[in-house]
Every structure is written in structure tokens, then in C-alpha cells.
Image 1 (cartoon, rainbow, N blue to C red):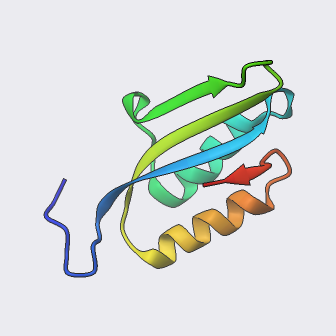
Image 2 (image 1 turned 90 degrees about the vertical axis):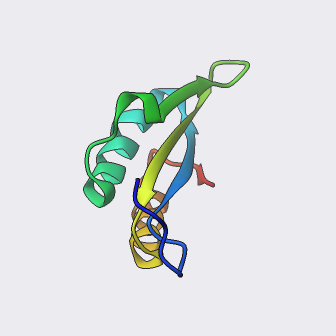
Length: 87
């Protein structure tokens, strides 16, 4: 990765997306994230089911280029029906 600029970008930025296991969360969230950041490398993504298996948490570390990019990404994620919460 390149040296961060004075505003802190570009930088590695973890995005956590939570949703119901059966809602297609991983596919939907991945499509949204890749629209804003480009292809996700497999080692920069993980999926963890909840203890009871009803929910999943997808964590993806992206290279964020600007605050505006992140704002648009979060707006689209929170508008997705499969997404219950983003962090």
C-alpha cells in the first residue's frame, strides 16, 4: 500500500456487516463493497456465524481512498435489505 496522505487516505479500513444467515448477506454485501472498492482479495475477508447460527458477520478490510467513498459505501450497505447493521 502507498504512504497515507495528510488526510489519512488511502488506508486499510475494516468494514463489518451483520445480517441474517439466510438473507444472502455475504453475496449482497460483497457485490456492494466491490462496486465501491474493486475486487476483494480472499485473505481480506472473513465470515463468522453467530453462536446460534441465525446471523452472520462479514468483515472485509478494504483500501479506502476517501471519506466520500466510505460514505457512499455505507449508504448503500445500510439500504440493502439483507443488512441489519454495519460497523
